[in-house]
Structures are given as C-alpha cells and as structure tokens.
Amino acid sequence: MRPGPAPRPPAVAGDALRERLRRLPKTELHLHALGALRPATTVELARRAGSPVLAAAERAAAEGYAFDDLPHFVEFFIGLFGLVTTPADFERVAWEVAEDLAALGVRYAEVRWTPTSHTARGATVDGMWAGLEAARAQVERRLPLTLRWVVDFPRSLPLAVGEAACGIAVATRDRGTVAFDVAGDERAVGAEPRFAALFRRARAAGLGCLAHAGEAAGPESVAAALDLWGVDRIGHGTRAIEDAALVARLARGTVPLEVCPTSNEALGVVPSVAAHPVVELLRRGVPVVVSSDDPTLFGTDVVREHERLHLEAGVPLDTLGRLAAASFLQASLPAAERHERFADVAREAVAWSEAACA
Ligand SMILES: [Zn+2]
Image 1: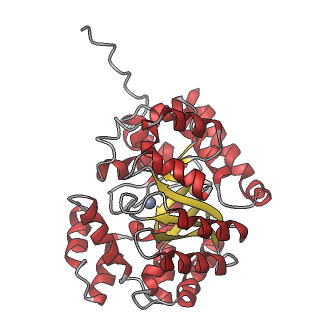
Image 2: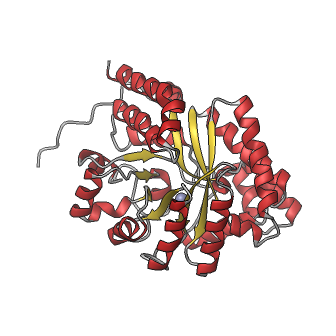
Image 3: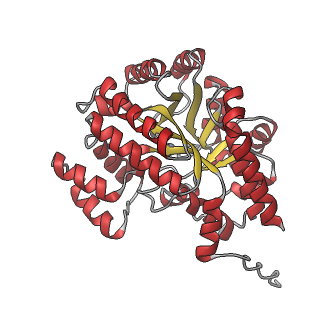
C-alpha cells in the first residue's frame, strides 16, 4: 500500500502555541476541585492530617502522579477528601484552583465538589460553603473569572448519599451552586432509574443537571443519562462513538460532551489522544466542550488539553476557538445572565478563531 501524504506540521507549536491557546478566552466546565489541588498544597495538607496519601503526594510534587489503573486512581482520590475539612481549607483550595484557571485564560469555571465525602470526614456544609463563598468573593474582586460550583455525588454509595448531595445542591443554589452531577464508577452503577427523582428535584430548583457517562461504561450509559435523568451536559461521553444512532441523536440535540482527552488516555478509556473519537464526533456534528477533569492528577491543564487536541488529534485551531466560544453558551446559568456576562468574551473567542484561520 502506498503511504498517504505526510501530515502537515502545525504552523505553531511549543511555547508560542501554548501562549496562543492561553490567550483564547475559554471555559472549564468539567473540573474536580480535588483533582486540581496544587501538589505543594496536597503535601502540606497531607502532612497536617497524617494522611497515607502523603508519600504519593511528595513523589508527585517532584515527578508528577502515576496511577496503575482506575481502582488505584479512585483509592488515591478518596484519600484526598480527608485533607480538606475546615472553612479555611476550602477557601484556600478554591482560591488556588481559581487563580490557576485564570492564569490559563479561563473566564468561566464550574468547579465540582463532592460535599458528602467531606462531611463524612469531619467537614460541615456551612463551614464548607463559608470557605467556598469567601474564595468566590475574592475571585470576583481580583480575577477576570466567573466562578460557580457543581455538587456531585458518587453513584456507588447508597441512594441516601445522593439524596443528601441533592439537598446540599438545592440549599446552596444562592451560594454559587449552579448544577448537580452524578460521578463515580458507572460500571458498578450505570443507568439507575432511582436517580431520576434527584435530577427532577435539582431541575425544579433551577439547577443544571449533569452526569458522568460513557467513560467506563458504553453508549447505553449516555442514552440512559439523557432518557432517565434528562441531563444538560454529559461528562466525557467518549464511548458514545460506539453507537451511530446515539451520535446522530447527540448531533441533532444541544447536550454537549465534556471531552477530557488526557483523562481518557490516563485511565485507558482511549489508547491515546491521537486515537480519541473527538475528531469523528466533531465531524458528525456533536457539540463538544474541552475540559481537563483532574488536571493535577493527570499532569495536564485546560490549555494543554487544547494543545494536545491540535497537535496529536489534528483538531484545527479555528475549530478549538469556535468550541471555546460556544462553550460559554453551555454554562449552567440562566440564559439572560449568560448573555450579559459572556456575549463580549464569546465574541473575543470568535475573533481568536478567525485570526487562527488567517
Ligand atoms: Zn470527572
């Protein structure tokens, strides 16, 4: 077989590309706060708590994290919850995450928390939100970033935990919480009809409804999140590609996939970023928002996610610019507020995209 033409080398790469992507006004719509902890902060908090995650955190501060597989990753992540317990801890972590996002050109972020996993380890909801809201007030004053919270719950715990999380999401909707999300292992608990009542309650309270789906489990998990829970965005949705009818349905609709390429590669959902189905999903018209999931744990950030999609998966820069512009429309905010806050910044992203074509 004759080899095809060699792929054209990208016009910009290295630091120049990273700087250009940093300047693209963008959102971060799928990010777990504890997956974005600064390594030095993790070491300090783990030392204070006498936590078993200290050794891994110290190693990671020098050379990054490495996980054998998903169970190893989950075990480590669970260890992080006990590190962040006081109002001052929540304020510090939320501020540091926001500061790092702003430095990456993120102008709107929905940061995920799992409050029931903190309250099970000594935190209180009021203490947690006192810290989070102190951080958000600081962000409002000091950073060009709009910051909101997502409350998630681990689907493999008893339903009562999901009910408690939903109650916390509803109770904190005037304190920055804009959406409710189901996370955790979809292979253990996938299409769970009992969660439908939680999503109904969240929606009735004006919250956005999100679900991790189509990551560990197949396309049926994505379809169930749409059919049973009526979600507004899908976390990952990578394996939707296995079902052509589902892909066509997603392309016809408005529910985007929050695509996190490095996370998918690190946890073996895809063999490599180059082989990620995002290119085919985009070609078939599926709405996509680019996100980083657990950036510190996977050695990435949201700029790097854009960079890898361009360099390794071949997504053109102007496409990345258009996705960033469109992502502001996917914020879990009322339409009028979205327009008021983001019309200018989305236009900036469109201009960035047009300049990338020139
Ligand atoms: Zn996630």
